[in-house]
Image 1: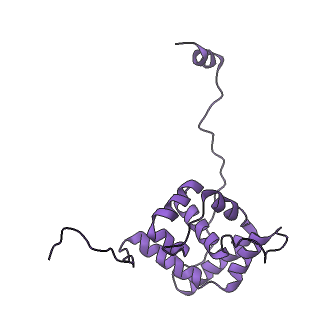
Image 2: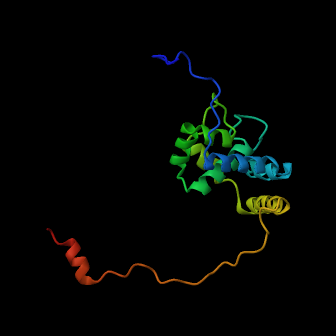
Image 3: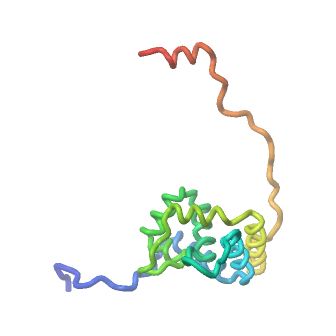
Length: 170
């Protein structure tokens, strides 16, 4: 029977049947399957230089920080856009491990924490992920050749006449 007004929305959001949501769920499953060493590496970067990491405000967890980094790199988001999507998207909140009532990190908190993760930390984590993908038959784990050919820039130095034309009132 159709009603005029929905009495109360569901407290549990439905699973989204979309390719991107399924990809994020699979990525989340793979991140959970990482050895505890992976999160220890990220945690070490987050607390590096902190006088007493056992005191003070909690801050972003190592897990949330790594997952936010994955989202940022995967989608090419700025920190502002990442903060918005974590606030707005139930799929991204679920991937990041944020519950319905959890406060989402601000753009500045995301930037401050993500920038603390160093390349030497990400390399072994990437190796662990690739090893898991090879074990599951999803990848062969071979090296991909990287080209380093230098291309000519798509700009040229301005000429005197072009500078004069740009400066002329008009």
